[in-house]
Length: 377
Image (tube, rainbow, N blue to C red):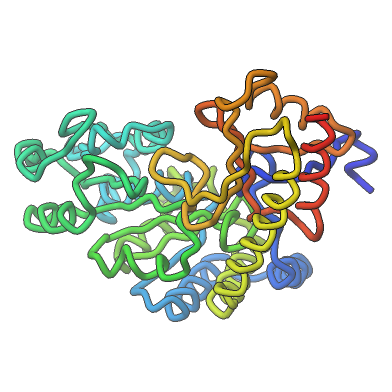
């Protein structure tokens, strides 16, 4: 109803759990939880803590909390590492009185979200080269002005110093390690894999594989750091003054906290093998249909390697390599799909058009295949 009133068109999502087109569809369990929360009032700090305790027990972690998106999780995790829960430092954010605000990042991990770390006040410093990082590079970069180390999960990535080695060296110098694993679900085992490797804080998106609202994030890890992350989203009372802390602009609603709690609960119980087979079925259907065209490139089932921004990489895709035809290119075909009455969003890399089944709803793979065949006529 409201989309029609606003003149906003629904799109068919063959791209993936991308925030630019809405993240993901919210699970029914999460919708029910939002509805429950929307009708009542509660102590928000109590809800935040108890929801985190419940999630941590579900996934087998030490502590957890819900944030207003994965980016907020990165900012708050960085602030927690820089302040260590110290009130003077918390009140000074985004500056830290001791200047212990350095955050190390591998050069191979350059990406758009480094600005999030700087928002918290971190001095982002790089080590290693743009092609490779060694343990020696890491050791040489460590000094007494550091607050922690940031690790972005782009695995499998050539030249990266693996997380296990990063944790080993960082902990030898009493430095916490934050892991950005926003899009790394599935597989569900990743809810435990990174903390088991020794990471102190792991950040996931709530609005991707978990099936929660797009503006939620899930942070797992050390209890003391999690407690500071929750604290940073509220106020501190200093004498007669009430001071809104760094994370107040990133506050999470009661609806979002309860919704993501329900989404995680549903996710850990889901039949992920069956879900993967369901996605493979959609891919197989599109490949069979598109193979009938004499003009389209031969469709291939692929499991993307490193370099794809659409995560996770465990989900199969249909790949149409437009380097093999001369009548059009992948970007042009993508634009034509977007201009249809029922727009179809795909993604393109190196003149290859990819169809991701993860967000295709019932029978939409049939529409995608039919429209591509029509456009190729």
